[in-house]
Amino acid sequence: MSETTAPTPTPTRSGPARPRAALRRDGAWPWAFVAPLALGVAVFYLWPIAQTAWYSLTTFGVFGGTTFSGLDNYAELLTDPTLYRSLGNTLLYTAIVLLNIPLAVCLASLLNLPGLRFAAVYRVLYFLPYVAMPTAVAMVWRIIFNGDFGILNWALGLVGIDGPYWISTPGAAIVAVAVVGLWSSLGFSMIVLSAGLKNIPPELYEAAELDGASRWRQFRSITAPLLTPSTSFLTVVTVIAGFQLFDLLYAILGSTNPTLSRSMSLVYYFYRAGFVENDKGLAAATAMVVLALVALATLVQFRLQRRWVHGG
Image (cartoon, rainbow, N blue to C red; front, top):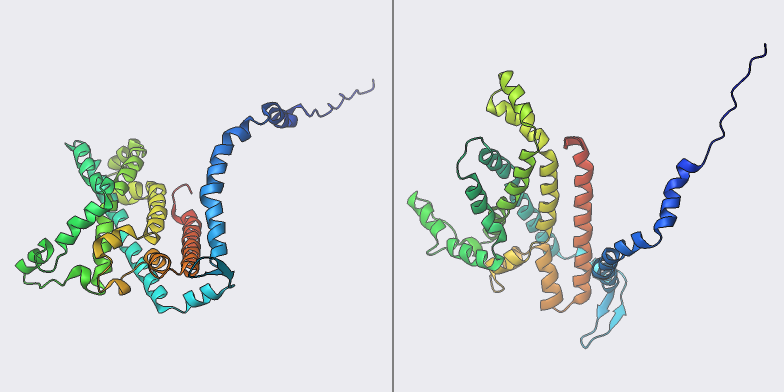
């Protein structure tokens, strides 16, 4: 009796062909939904970047008009010591403001303790500085930092410390601005981290308690690792915001501050070049340098977060 073999089924293309058929059936509708967003990105982001890149290679005349100057603006920019001082001030401001993340982790953990009364009220109070107008915040802090009658120097005087003129002393001015930035961004970080804490399964804490883990051990082994996606997001956002420092610095120090030349940020350097000295080519080159630094810092953070972000 001869052995019969089952016919080999011929592969059909119905499976792989479904997505293509679906795309053909959808027609232009997906593109129609994406078009408004793509148009907005192209008009308000890509085109200004391309135009700024072109302007950075030109020199503007006194009465208008541009002439191509190649990399002269970048050569002038990279040989200006004020640029590197501004970069140092920007990095110092960003480093100080980044301290709000560990502070927010501790505060958010305390506000999420079971049985805590008025937790929602505390969150609102911490979040209010973030939504307040930067100019109003700056006016209040200028009074606090006043060297003659400010409440900060008054408090330091109670313990025998003679406080400086905070916003008019080189070195102290940028630190004072960074303290305000840290204070105003703390509420936003707390809200983000509170949402991250609510996503941690309570069963993990219950199991840890059964194993005899202390509160500190639970924080180190459960809370901190599972909050790394939120802390990574806050780190990226804070670094980008730090490189964009301008309004808070301008509002606190003012335009006639004697220490401004030693306390300006990169964006303030751009503002001075473009709108005070009317050197728009140099200002465009500064904007491209800031864009490159922000992109580089963001890329480095995305690379590093693969090693320490839980589940990343």
